[in-house]
Length: 254
Image (cartoon, rainbow, N blue to C red; front, side, top):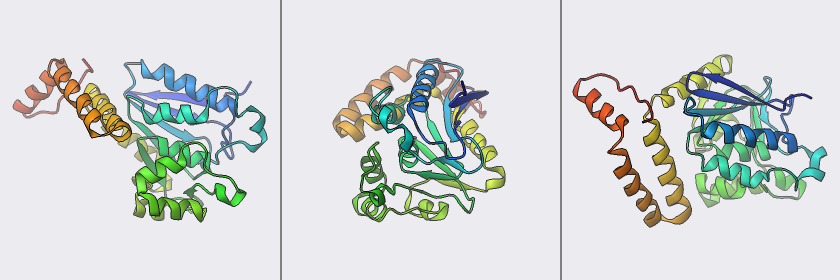
């Protein structure tokens, strides 16, 4: 049986590839395999950053596989899977190597960073209203959280397919890289992120998502708890020592 999701590891970075070209549409097998991989990597201390991308050179993902509608209520639920990625304790990067539409855009929105190719045929958006349906995997909530209500409504209600530069200009994506060396640039970004103190990074992700979902008071409780915990770690000692010695710190996640 073909593998629907591939995994590659390079130093502290894991690259997860949706392997259903040319559209890389999401069916029950993609959901099952993607969930299993991110679950496994959560406890893998050799991995500090995740990249999610699509196989081939056309697109990240065109979203839900319309031929697999009968399995929508089977296997891992897409909303819960994307929530899991959104709340993940390690940074997750969406490497948008072409189009990211519908459920593909919603998956990218669940990631902590969105990096996009400048390829001419690259577009991102949630055009479901054209079909008389809505973005059902969290796109309504996450796009609003990211862009604000009016910009999100403009994108969703008019089924906009934004170019990389249009998406960058409104904050839907964080970086746009040349297509010729896109994955190299994504890897460089991930490598730089992986050098950051992993325990502190995890605490920041936890505190941020708690505050966004439960309010500032609950977020501040997490921040205070994390600060007390981090002060006792080897990484904190290494950070202060490296600062005093005027060198780059080498964090070990301890």
